[in-house]
Image (cartoon, rainbow, N blue to C red; front, top):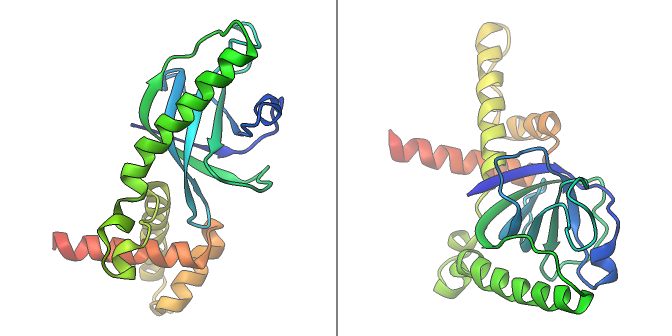
Length: 205
């Protein structure tokens, strides 16, 4: 429904204190409604994880003029990821923001939100595992943001090669290496994007 990307910043660590650590992104997009969402988080290296996301100003702890944040609790994930760039796909709306009268009420709601988000995301993330088939069929698809960046950069590089008559066409390996350096993405993710873009071109030709 909505896609937000940004750098993970330090927050107030309230979620960590409550047992729900979050990856926080400053929210500047007013078109995204405040509330709790089931979501998918993608890293630049191609990893994707299910998440439960809160968008808003944390009304249980702060006033209405507080900083607006996207807080993503990445399900069953551990590790320090401050400073990393992530893309968050909001998949389904769970509930609006609420001001709870106690921490106990808040934590009860958060546990319910987590269960709902896990159920929603499992329908999209785990579908390939349940259906069986080959390893290629179960491979995670490249995130849409990565496909867009690789497609745009590839088109620009191809135009530059055409403009320079002395430059021959880049080999597949060279293309992957150049795009990886140019976009700051892993070679594996670049290869996956190029393969999916090629498959899409074949299907539409």
